Length: 351
Image (cartoon, rainbow, N blue to C red):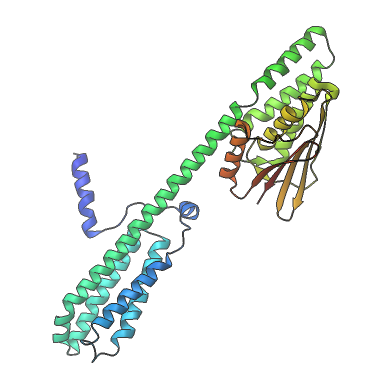
């Protein structure tokens, strides 16, 4: 007969008496992802100060044992070394290994002291030694437990960030300008109905744009070359609709590539069209360029429209773009400046 949930819980609780410590065991990938916090050096300072104070207070009792100071400091150093070892990989197995080694060492030391004639000293010092052992083992247990909770909290935080990034990516996919899709379909339908020769090229570009756009938002990152191919299709569609009012150029040197969240450059180009080209009767030019700056990759999107307004604020698209960029690449930057004429968006991608 299988045990009930309550009896299983009781068994697990009792297990902590003879095999204490956290049950969670982190994989190597989890430790690499969330367990990189350094050992707090303040613990060393705090421990050494307290050990020195204890040795100083009891110095009148240990005046006949000059070796007690180096021994006490050495044991303090050893205890901290074990604590750092537990910090690197906080497991029940390690905690219990360290605890058993200490227990065996103290037991062996007591037997040795008794055999060489220190029976009285051993008996008198036994309560103090046991108290110190309990304090050290408790400190190790607390370090291990705290470390496990710290790593678990960091893993939860990273998981929430990943979920937020995926949600932002899906929202970005949903925010592909509806009016762009509807206007393109309306133009395509009109050209098909009137037998306009521009219908076939527009349909090819639109199909290729959708084929490249819709699946990419399932990715967290994508190559810059794929992003610019999508941008090229988008600009070709807009050029078919706007005619001579729009010209564009895309400069991607051979061998230059980077990873970035999908749709980042596309959003910048959409803004350049919406705010720099469409408001002008004469239209304008959009230039997308990529260059290397040391280890960084610089992507610029420039239009020759009216430029930034004095009270310019980020809209929904740019706000989401900055948030997604910060989540995926905290060291990457996006800036908007007046280009005189027009607006210049500069995206800096760091490796």
